[in-house]
Image 1 (cartoon, rainbow, N blue to C red):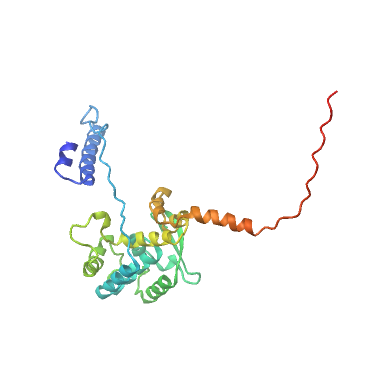
Image 2 (cartoon, one colour):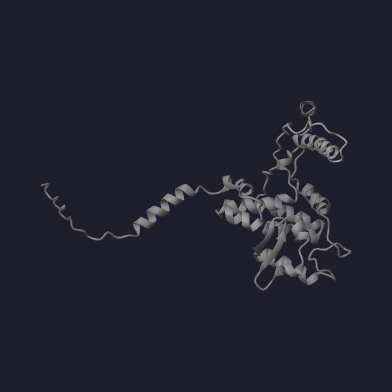
Length: 257
């Protein structure tokens, strides 16, 4: 069945979903004592899925996109800017409350998807979040809906998705890994930091990656540190000055009796 589905042209992710559902059905049948045989799905290897997005924005594309979002919605422009300048997930931004933001020290304190972390704000993020904190109307959320409730994550498909179309960033039949979506802003943040030589472990801490493996995907963007390392050692050595030494005679070995 797996082979037949793949031959029909279904994406590996779709096949995984179908086969996973079948596995869950058998597990429930066993749990409810409606089936006593072995689960035929136990030894089925599910197709691998590469969900990693490769696309990140250039500076010109980022400026164009945010300008297009601003024409659609000022609030979504601010939300998009915060993601681009902090690397925060959309769900984290939509759930951001005034108590999570320390404006005096310019730090955002999050209890996010992967635990607690603190994110320092640059000037752009600070100005946007300060303005949002001042404008909020009767809601503890910084970016609430018109009713004062938290916006759902899929709400980005409205103003943001239309702005992406306005910017012409997604050509027809583009591979999903190269498609510009809201998460591209977070991916751009990580990519730009890596390109500027920020250590990968720092990037992982800033964005709250679940594991170092997730951050390693940006390693190919990092400047080649090997040559720099050699030059650092050479520069350190050149700072030293040799002290004049005297060649001492070798000590005589005692004669054996």
